[in-house]
Image (cartoon, rainbow, N blue to C red):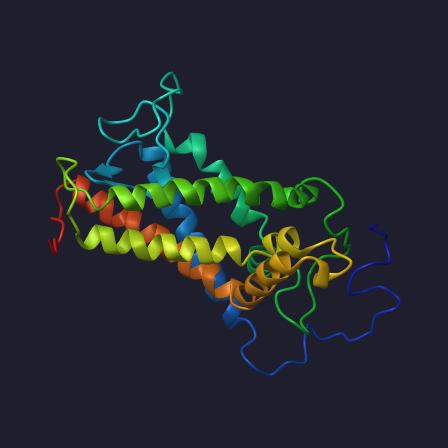
Length: 264
């Protein structure tokens, strides 16, 4: 609970007038995170509201998958139940991958430090006078992370399906492979690595067990996810970049700026 005596100026904290005694460039990491993450947010927002240039057969932008609104021909593999939706089709489904990332344990650390300066770095005083943790609105919504993980698994499965379809040509004939196919393969690999390395996934497969010896299958799954979890931060960033790169590639194809580099 928040009190008037909480925070870095509380009576139980060392009374150090300096913001920090660190002599290194501690500000470089949060600044870099701010610039990169803010750039992605701006780019993703623009693309999500554009509502066009998201499909270049056979490639569908991950920002618009599954395309359930009033989509261009060939982009809807699951029908258009929200055809009445007046805005961009991306706004129907982006809430799920966005919610998963925004509530992610690693991303919380990243944007708490870089955007809210809470704290900006280890050993650096934060400017906030009080601290309530994630017990109040809106941060209490962070507790929905596990439910967003379930949704993220569904989205990853759909993106996997899109990647399989990327082995077709523009006439939907199998046997095609282009640069877009390769980019989508890389992207879905990072998406799965990020999703399966999640802390919630680790708890789901191995949590609440009294004896691992009685659950050998879940123990092996927990061990596998635990190993992935060690690189969760890297997968978080790699998948963020790969999603943006695939969307940009599809956009350039759809606008006729470039042509797909085909291997066969």
